[in-house]
Length: 499
Image 1: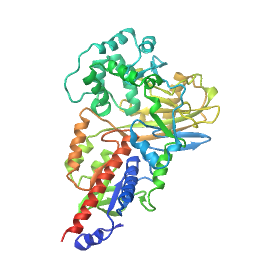
Image 2 (image 1 turned 180 degrees about the horizontal axis):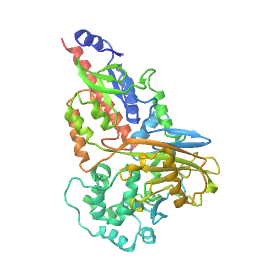
Image 3 (image 1 turned 180 degrees about the vertical axis):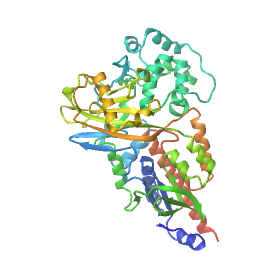
Image 4 (image 1 turned 90 degrees about the horizontal axis):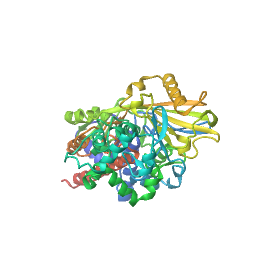
């Protein structure tokens, strides 16, 4: 392994070629970990020796994924689950031997509440993200006015939209289903998923299936009704998100991170190794760190946020750096609060609630963690996780921990009838953590990928490009590893065959 001062010239290249190829992964979040593990798999499967090093600026791996245990409670500070519908994270869990540790959401209380005029109203059964799939629950719902319900039904008669490649999610929902659906349901649900403003969020990059529904069936409601009759249990099972598709690990999401880290070769990970620059030198890549170390590599995976990646590649390509820096991010915080069950008046007969921006409250969503998954709180206790910030309320992330906790407790007292002090509260902050897929995002990503393709041996991974979920990050990390592995093997073969 080449570590420290870097030289140039034929002797260095000869020394490098006498060893197995070396790859460097920058960033130890889930995408970087997936990339590192996949490199090891490829080396074993193809019986091709390979060395790799994962450089992490922090003192721990996992990025935004973090689980803590406290007094019998299991707290998720970041993501608490992933979608099984997207196969990559689930497949990786199986390869890691974690399949028996996977658990789904509880069967009971698969309801999403929406705050409306200060009350928690259930989202109508069968209402899936943007539109209803069942008529009777919609007609009985107090969440929408009768004019709002009528406007929603107009989707069945409206013509298809123009042949534009992309539009904002807000414009699409307003055009098809009306302002009330956007304001009362779509904006808060999207706020919970993407911490984004739907008026700027790309439909094609985030929810392309709805665009496809309009193109194929004209009416979104009809398309969803038809899909519901094809898969009736999925349509009837829940409101809001398709809860049956969410899975987690018995001991929390950190279990996934720990399993990946444990299967990396000893000495692979370097902590407190913040990378400052990636550049070409002597026909190879050179990765330089704040501590003065430098790592020579045949291939590099950059699994860092786009704004950080932009800084790393400035010496290589200023234009690429500018395009990466144009991907904006929002900040958010989570607050886990533990209570005795008798402190909460609300029946907690759902998995949580979302808060429309028009309600003018200081939180964007709340999850009843101990209702949603087993093993999250002791008997007679409740664990609630609240989300603050996002694109529309980012200023709230500037509150200190005590101020944020006080704001959240006031909201829970009003919305859930929470009385008294929590047993404890835990605030976790994630500045500039959620990329904002604005209108035109896919075109921007295509341009970035085309530019990166000019530099053999470099690949990008993470949530900034083609999906923000954990499964998407696993996919991007594995794809980056496969691209870099193919390059280093081809390059080494070419060098060895050269006269």
